[in-house]
Length: 199
Image (tube, rainbow, N blue to C red):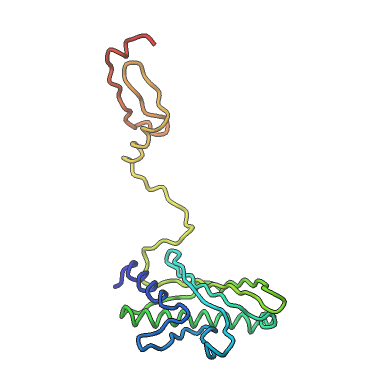
């Protein structure tokens, strides 16, 4: 079974080879399912789009951005389904290349709905940023982000921390523990000639 580090390295190596103009082992352009791949790269007008991924605990955040016409955005149902379809193509590509690279299968399960942000560039064009979360399979021990921390310090550490608290000095017996950790052992002074001198 692949470790967490192996999974992260496998996904990272796949995504590293998805830049615009990347070629496969046969010298052919890599097809992911993006709009920039459509048409002839020299004589046709090219659409600017791309994607990247981000690891967030046991989740993979797939982020897609693209330039779109305003009239396409106004067709809401078609627009949203097109974004979802593109993100789905990206995930399928990652799974396929992961299997080819590592020999293991990659499980990515949708978690929640995609989030889409549209910003105007001009009267005719917009810039679309979207992302969707996917639960990565085979990572049961990885904790989710933003989970509350738990106090799991053992007694020995609590006693040690108590030495740094507010202490009261008892005459002739050195430093005592504090009220928070009453059992903590305080540091003892070495009494000598200077302690008897007036201050």
